Length: 489
Image (cartoon, rainbow, N blue to C red):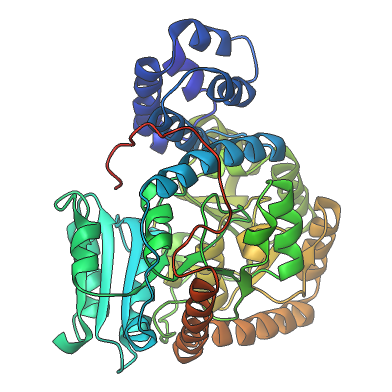
C-alpha cells in the first residue's frame, strides 16, 4: 500500500501530510506505475514516472513538489542527480507557462520600484516556523524605510491567532502611509491582477513554494528578488538571488543541481538577515528543566530530527558524552518512539528530551554548545542559540554554516567531533568561540544593515530587469503549447 510505503521512516508529526500525498499520488499516477515503486528506489521511480508518462503540467509540478517535501519529512535527501532531473523538468513547464502569456515588456518607473514592494511568502503558520516569522520580519525591515509607501504580503492558507499576534507586534506600529497589508491568495484568486492595479512594484520571493507558478509570472511583471536557503538551487528565474553563503559555495552546489549559469551569475551574498533587534534575555535556570548546574550541555534542535540525525551523528554524540562525565545531551523537538526509547535507555540521565518549547531563546541560555546535525536546514534554531550565548558547531554545508564565522566549521564528521572534543575540554576555547560567534551574530541581526543591503539588491534587480528587456524572457524556449495549470497559491 502506497501510504504504508511513504510512512516508512517518516517523522510522526508529518504523518498526516504524508497520507495526503499518498492519496494525491493514487489519484494522479497510473496504478501500475505506483505498484512498481514498492520494489525499487522511491525517488528514482517517481522521477522516471514524471519524465516518461504523458502527465499534465500541473500533475508533474504537484508530484515533484510532493517528492521534495518527502525528502524533508521522511528522507533520504534528494540525490543531486535526481534533483537536477526534477529541476530541469519542472523549470521547462514553468518557463513555458510564463512564455505563453505573451506579455508586452513593461518599462517601470524607478522611483515607484523603490517605494512599492510585494512579498510572496507561502503559508503563514506560526512565529516559531522560521519561514513564517521571517516573512513578517522581512516586511518589517522594508516598512522601516520612511520612503516606502507599499508593502504587501501575499500568503496562502489561514493565518492562525499566534501568527496574527506576531504580525500585529511587528507591523502594527507602522503608519498607514507605509501601506502594509496582507493579501490572501485563497480569498482572492485574482490577487495578481489586483496587485498590478495598484501600480508597479518590486517583487520579493521569500519561502514561496519552489514550484509556485506565481514566481515565473511575477518575474515578467517587475524586478524580482529571491531568498534562497538550504543550499538548494532555485527552479525559477529571478533578477537577484540572495543568501549568506559565499558565491563559490553556491556555484558548486547549484551546478550539481543543473541550475542554468544565468541563475548562478545572479546570486549575491549579503551579510545581515531579517529579524527583530536582539533583546536582553532573562536566562532560564538549569534546575527548572532538570539540568545539573555544572553540566556541559550539548543541544540538538529541530522539527525533523528523526530524519536529520544519521548514525554517524548519533554515534559521535554518544562517544562525546562518554568522554566527558559532566556532559548532557538536550534534544529539542519531536522524536520517533524508537529513537526516544533508545536514547533514554542507553544514555539515562545524560539525556534530556524537550518535545517542544515556545521559549527556545530562553531555553538556549542553558546551553554550552549547539551541535548541528549533518543537515541542510537548522539555520533559525542555530541563530537563536548563538544569540542566547551558545557556541555553534556545524559541517561546512547547509544553512547553519552560513550563519557563523569559519571558526569550528568542520569539513567532515571526523573533524566535527574532534572540534567538539576540543570545546568540551577547554573552557577558554569555548569562551573564545562564543565571543567570536556572538559578535558575528550581532552584525547579522543589524536591521539597519539588512535594509541597506536589500535596498542595494532592489536597485540591482531594477538594473537587471531593464537589461533583460523589461520583463522579456531571459532565454528563448521552444515548447509545445502548455497544459493550463491550477490557479497559483
